[in-house]
Length: 269
Length: 272
Image (cartoon, rainbow over all chains, first blue to last red; front, side, top):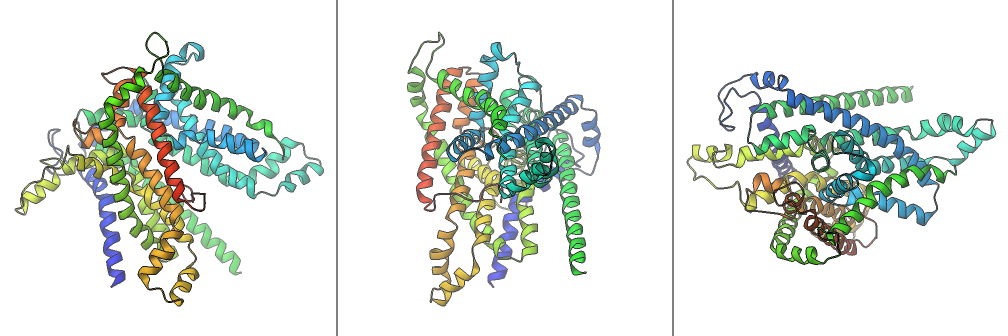
C-alpha cells in the first residue's frame, strides 16, 4: 500500500515537472499560424525550417556558443590555478578569499547582474570595456569561477602532497612534476568544473541580460521573443536543444555504464 | 605544494569583478545625480515597501510549497534501490537543462484563459478558471522553476542517513511517525536549510516569472530593479539602493536560517 502511494506521488510530481516540456515539444510540430499557441492543427516541420532561416536567432546561437566556450576555458584555467593557490593558504586567509569568491553564487543573480552593469558602464572610462560580447564573457567568467574552484578543491585536498615532493626529489622541475603528478590527479575535478562552467554559461539569462547591451545571446533572444508573444520557432529551438542534451546525457551514462561493466569484468577475473 | 602566489591572478580578478562592482552599488545607493552624498534613495525605497512585502510573501510561499512537495519525493527517492536512485535524480535534474524562460513560457500556454487547461476543463463541462496574471500563477511558476533546487540537497542528506540509526529508533519502540519526526527530520536539517536558501533567494529576487505569469499587477523587487536599470524608469541610483536593501534583507534571512542549523554547516547543495 505504502509503495503504491509513493509511486503515485512520484508520478504526479514528474507529470508536473515534465508537462510544460511535453507541451513545448508537441507544439513545435504544430501546423498552425502564429495566432494560437494552444490549438493543435496537424503535424508539420515548418517551424524547424523557419528556425534555420532566422538569421537573428542563428546569430544569437553563435554568440552564446562563443561566450560559453571562451568563458568556460578561461574560468577553468584561472579557477584551477586559483584553487592550487588557495589550497596552500592558511586557514583564515583561505576562508576570507573563498567567501568573497563565492559571493556571485550566494548573491541574487540580479544583484550580480546590475553590479557588473555599473562596472561596465561607469567603469568603462578606466576599463575600456563596452557592453557587448566581451563584457558578457568577463561577467560569465566571474560567476563560473567559484563553481570551478569548488570542484577542483576537494581533489586537491584528497591528493597526497608527498607525491609532488617525491617527483621533485627524483629530479622533476616543479612545472614538470605538476603536469606529471598533480594534474592527472585533479583532472576529474577540472573536467567537472569545465562542464559546469560551460552549461551555466549557455543557460544564463539574468547576468547576460544586464551585461550584453545590444548583443544578443540565445536566452536574451528567447526573452525578447516571449515578450512579443511570438512563434513556435521557440518551441522548435527548445526541442532541438533539449534533444541534444538528452542524447548527450544518455551517451555519457551509457559509456559510464559500459566502462563500469568492463571494470567489473576485469575485477572478476 | 606551497604556491600561494598562484592565487594572485584570481584575487586581482575578484577585486575588479566582485568587490569593485559591489562597492559601486553601495556608492550609487548613497549618491545623487551630481555625485553628492544623499540618503534620499534609501528613503525612497520605503515607498516600495508593499513590493518588498509581496516579494517576501510570495518567495516564502513558494519555498514552503517546494519543501512540502519536495521532501516526500526526496525521501521516496532516497529509499529506492541504488540503481533507480541515479535514474530518478537524473529525471529531477533534466528539466533544469531546458532554459527556465522556455519552461515558464510553456506554462503561459497551459494557464492562459484560452489555454490547454481551460480548454480541457471546458471540454469536460467544467467552468473555466482564470489562472494567468494572478499572484497564484506567479507562486506556481516559482515552485515549478525552483523545485529541483529543493529536492537535490534534501536527497543528498536523506541518502546519507545511516539506516541502522532508524532501526535503532524502531528497536527502542518508536513508531514510524516518531521515527520520522525525531530522527529523519532532525538529521536532514542541513539539507532543509540549504534547500530553503536555494529556493528562497532566486524566488524573492526573480523578475521574469512575475512578468510572464503575473501580468503587470504583481510587481516584485526584481521587476523594480530591472525597471531602474533597463526599463522606462531609468534611475540607477534608486535601483542601486533597492539592490542594496535586497542584499541586506537576504543576508538577514540567511543569518536567521543558519540559526536553525545546529551543526553549523549546511551540507548538500548543487554538488553532492
